Length: 328
Image (tube, rainbow, N blue to C red):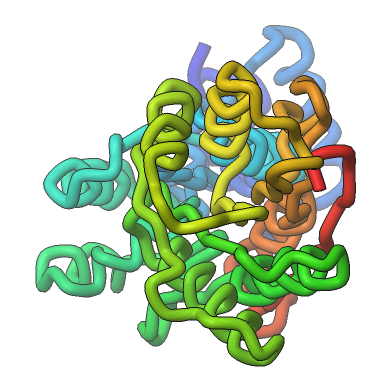
């Protein structure tokens, strides 16, 4: 049973059936009831592709994230998918791995699939603007970048104030009496750099040395454990560590504890993202809540508002908060 069969049995034109199916245009009440009766009789389900050809929209949103296994990205993506699905959109989620070549490949695929809009999850996608190919793809649709920023006409951002987050960590530690505070950077993204800037500014405002206070580390639990041994071999004194991510912080804390370091008596530790990991370790980790739920919800509101002509074309900044637990 197709639209031609429906039209023949109802004794109407194909265009009239199309208007009823897509709720577009005026149809007499009795005619609409006749068509709907035939639709119910055969349990007719219209083709999404056919409907898209009529409405010029597949009601499909693409989501590109770096690594869906990372809890922060997973949480944000989950909120995006749930909110969009609730609003009747189909969702395509792709985990790109973060390499520029893969970001462009998935972006090209989204254009070819003719998605109505796109959400980019993570500041790593800011690098797309450095590519002529990426700029060409982005101009085809409205785009929202979650916790990132792109200075393009049709791209809007929901940005967490990352510098404020690390500044809150520093201020908390200073209030606790710490002066020998170091920042541990485990990623090389725009978001990571903004966190460094916030740390350095807060240290300077507190009258503490801020140069040569940035330590580099690999990302993740095992990298953090290995990094703890590097820390213990340093001659320079440290009493507090600020991290840009929870899992690396927990790994470092775990490694320090194995070597007899007491947390927070000997070293205080503050993470970032306020993930579930922060509440699963011992002692529980103080961390910056960057409000991924709000990031996801506002990203959806911004994008669907652009698509449906009911929203404001604006960038949104979200203020994080410090959640103090046992590690500091």
